[in-house]
Image (tube, rainbow, N blue to C red; front, top):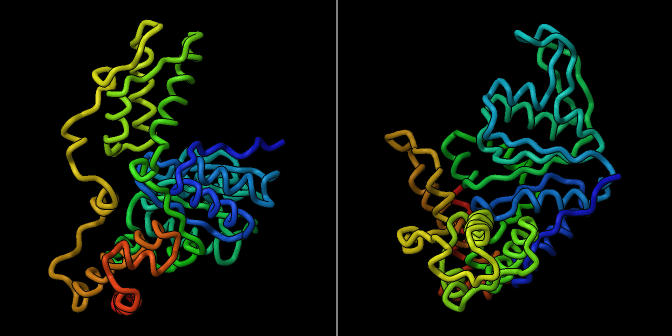
Length: 332
């Protein structure tokens, strides 16, 4: 029997809005694209989508595309026949076939080669694939959930990601909020991680945090998000002799990182460099793409209320609509 949905801890307004969107999207049998900075919980979001969907009793498989070479990624995804390559001794189904009737989660999908992307597009569009070394089609019924921490629109514009595949993956795009935007959740998660680590160490008392430590946790920008917070808290707990109060000095936060600006530019930094000179019209398209990213971020924060998004950007409602439509046309 399938396990229950993985819990996404937190009660902040930003996270509750994302949970609601995940619950709504889970009901629809369409591809979903999860985006957000590293460590924001895209894996948990993907699991929630599957286990709240009508496919919850079917298989749920995951694949970290960043950990595989191009050739290995293809054999993992599509399977292979005997003799397809050195060492292929028997017919082996890939992840798509193994996930038949369920869900396949592709993490860090931007790392896949264009050739592999083209084959995935065929599976998404027609529901069939060919194993390596075989001309035979295999029909599969799989819901695809993908995740990335880069701007796939920019990658598609630079020729590093197939625009057609991006269109098919983006029936719904859900942005996981960074930890610094989840007001109140940092303290809640810190206490949760501290209690979990104390239990793992067999300690009866749950460590407390000093006011100074809580202030540092709340003010730090967390470039590594939840994963980084968990590591910082767990290290502080296991190094303490109980009973003890975790102080600011025990947290080992890096001042240089705390002072550095973080946020959406984390994903943009991974954008592929353009080929010089830029093609005619490329500058205008890229400029419009950057503006659209600002519009999308404001809309997500405003729960897609356009008037509130306009206010967040310091624009009038009518100027917001005009500029957004203009940028959409120029980016195409």
